[in-house]
Each structure stands twice: as structure tokens, then as C-alpha cells.
Length: 192
Image (tube, rainbow, N blue to C red):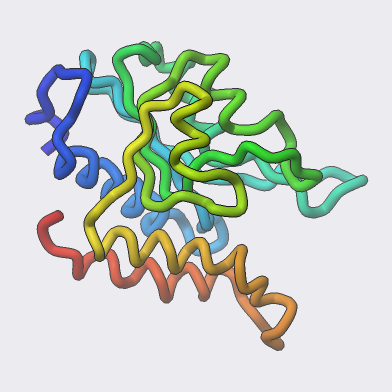
């Protein structure tokens, strides 16, 4: 399907959702110990290059809960891979962070995306802890949110990891098992 995507500034919704599906598939296919709650990809509409990324630990001796967010990793890979920000779409399972965080090893993902020139974003869901769709648009993003109920459900279930803080109320909680359970639904999506 990616080979069939046209060179246009505006992809059709089903094309954006196909890229979101592929981003979720990237998360699903990560090795067991490396699964991540958030995934991002950047697709260059002109060259048809695509990069996939996920959040990765940035722990050091002072902080054992420090992260490089998926969008940060995707921008880094995209710029190394010569993806043109003005001809690209960023796909995220959860909208980019805006707020300050002591758990992040870099500036906000929205700042990183804006500084690099990425404006076109399609997301699985808006992180209401961060902003509203209107706020992202005020910042200069052209952001769309999937309307596909299956993709939306999986992204929402991944986000529940942050909302429910399961490690605080479940004995023997295993994040990797939590992610495996959610992402196992992915092959059953059929055509998006």
C-alpha cells in the first residue's frame, strides 16, 4: 500500500490510517523486552521513505525513569534518512507531548517537531493530559485524528497504561505482557 500512496500534501484518511496501522505493527513486532507504549513513524510522501520509532529508555545513574519519546526518535531517524519535513507526515499512536516532564530526556516533542519543520501529523488519539486538537492547530500543526474505531481503540488501550498506572495497583504487573495483550488485537483488524 505504501508504494501506492500518491504524492500529495493531503493523503486520504485511509492512507493515513494504513500508516498508523503500520506504526502499530512496528510496536507489535518489537522483541518482547523492547515493546513500547508509544510509536511514531515519519513518511516522506515524495520519496516514499518511512522510518519507525518507539520510546526508548534514557536511564542513567541519577534517574531510572527517563525516556526518549517516540517522536524524538523518529525525527532523529528521519533527518538522518534525508526525509524532507515539508513533504512528510508524522504518524503517532498518541499525540506529541507539550508539557514539561522530568521523565523526558529532551525538550517537548512538539518543540522538536516544530523546530525540525514537521507540521503534518496524524495520530491515533489526542493526549488530553497534554492539549486539545485546537491547541495543536494553534501551535501550527495540521493534525488529524483517526476515525477508525479499531485503531482508535488500540491506541486508547495503549494510552491506558499512563492513565491507570497499573504498576501502582497490580501486584506482579508486567508492562511487556500488558502491551502484548493489547497489540495481539492488531492482526484482527483486517483492512483499515
